Each structure stands twice: as structure tokens, then as C-alpha cells.
Image (cartoon, rainbow, N blue to C red; front, side):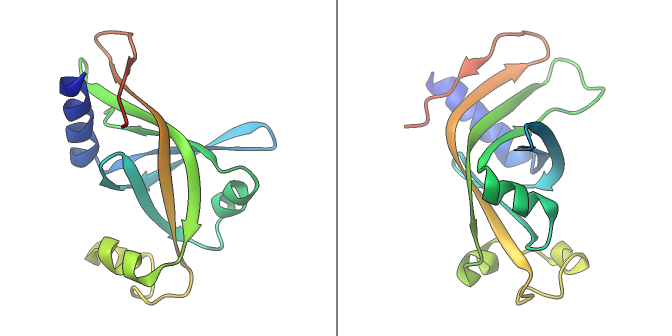
Length: 139
């Protein structure tokens, strides 16, 4: 299991763009997002005024898919389910900030920046070659 855990962490670290799925009015919603990770805890920045923030305030359950590339066969990817929390902690924004975010926000002091933090409840390693989902030990 340690090998699968390390493999999953490597995939998460190398594949920062993924899909965040939420549920609103009993219907799934999906968003491409850029993720930062500390272990299996994921972070992504968004605008406070987005629809997804309202959805997550109503239902914090989320699902993230990282590592899959369309058209690439035999590639492993990671699925993470958990609960999202919202924070505007400036020290965390400073820690996660990168220059490309200036395209989206008016600097890292923009009052509309919000961080979504996903604390995983389950994680699975999957592959396009094998349909088995390998559970990852999160302890």
C-alpha cells in the first residue's frame, strides 16, 4: 500500500489541473481548477462571487479528479472525495500565490479571493489500463 500511496502523491504533485465536482439541487456540477497540495489535502483559489462557492456553502461534499489526460492511454489518475471548507486566510493566500493568478485577480490582496480546502475522506488510485480502484491509506 505504501507504493500506491507514493504513486498517488506523485500524480497529485505533477498534475495540478483537475476537475472539482460538487452537487447542487441534487445535480452534479464540474469545474476545471488548479490545485495545490500538501499531502492529500488540496487547495484551490477561486472568486468569492462564483456559483461554486454558493454550492459548497449548501453542500461541502466534493470530488476531485487529478492526473487523467484525454487521449493518453494507460495513465494512472487519482480520485479524492472529501469535504471542502472555505477560508480567506491571507497567509495561506500568500503561500499559494503564483504570478499567473494576476490574470484572474487584482493581486494577492484582492478582497474577492477565497481558498477552497479539501480534506480527503477517501482517495483512490485508478488507471485506464485496469478498472480496479486501489484505496489509498490516508493516515
